[in-house]
Amino acid sequence: MKSSTNRRYSWCLSVALLSGCETGAPDATPSDAGSDAVARDATPEVGSDLGADDRSDAGAPGCAPSATDYTPRARMSATDSWPSCVSDPGLYVRFDMSTSSIARTTAFERIHRDEAGGRPSGFFDPTRDPSPEEFTAARMIYLEAEGLDSRLVRRTDEHFPQPAAGNDCRVATVAAAYPDYCAGPARLLPLVTASFRDGQLGATAAPPRVLAARVEAALLWFLYLSVYKESLTCSTATADCDSSWAYYTGGVQRGEARHAALSRYVLAAEPAAHDRIWDGLLAVRCWRDLDRATPAANPTLRERARDQLDRALTRGVVAVLRSRLLAMPGASAAERPAHLAFAQVIAPLLDRAARARSPAEADRLGALFAAAAPETLDVSAAVATLDRLFPCP
Image (tube, rainbow, N blue to C red):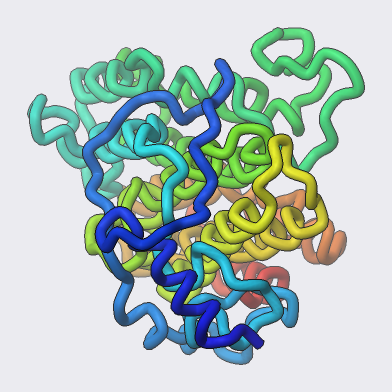
């Protein structure tokens, strides 16, 4: 158990810029050319996250943190086995104030509704069909320099082993040979490109809202992969921890109201999963505070933090998928195909995690989501299978 002295030190560490405390916080490490942390944003830092300890995992009945988890909401981490660190007060403390992934989460929100440009306007709304002009506007946002496309085309799924040689997924032959690892270019890019193209043409078999739902699901999965990937590359570029945090949160603290992109979806679907993801992000930051070498020297602690984060992230994605499934029975006949399209993008991407838990249940899930039409999808069975596979964040 941590002493009150250490907890006071940790608090001082997190608010040093505001209060003038002496800190031992690590200096920002310049990111390499491949890092996502390169551009300055104006997101304000918050001095405290009061109220975080009041949140519980009550939304996930029967669930509790693992014995090795970092639990900053429980008396500022005083009851867990982790040493005192910068994350104990419940705030994410950046290495660098330049975090370009915030602009990418903002771009995701602008694809849905671009207030400045006027279109798209409700691009991901399953109750309406976006116009061809909205597809063009959405695609232009997606293709902005150093934006979503620039990272999706190279995004890897670090749950899979890296190829022994030649692991640049931007090379077509590498992506084709290792589609699971090269998930961005091999799995997501063709889907996003085809959906934008067909929506711009305005004359395809799939309704425009179905195409938009496919883009939505693919980009959310990209954000999920990015959170996990950046938590690994933070081993060599500390600012990538900031990118991991920002790809989920949109660059805000837990107590702020304006969460964006993936965090907005998870928070709406299951607040307990959202809080557990936040705990995982703070665990990653805590690891990097305790392990300040470059490259990082404690892979055991790193993977302990990343496992906690990944368990929560996976349940968060499942919660979002569940919410779309549960919306189907009460939706209109025109709306239901969009919900199904969203689910049929997300569900196969969960296969790795599902198969690691139960091959039989993974097969069952795959069969359920092979439904040719919303009317043939057994929503209750799909939700029950997801909950058996992924019961806790």
